[in-house]
Image (cartoon, rainbow, N blue to C red):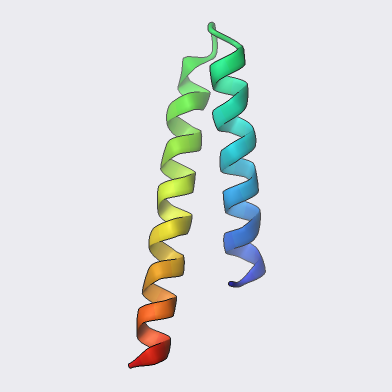
Length: 52
């Protein structure tokens, strides 16, 4: 998995947990979810294309 995707997952998780723990900053929850989804989709595409 490329370093950029790993960093995106870590940042996404940090923002996700920050959004959960800080009720006033709910936008961080959505940003974290979007970053995690984008990183997972990127990883899946790279894995699928690598095997083909």
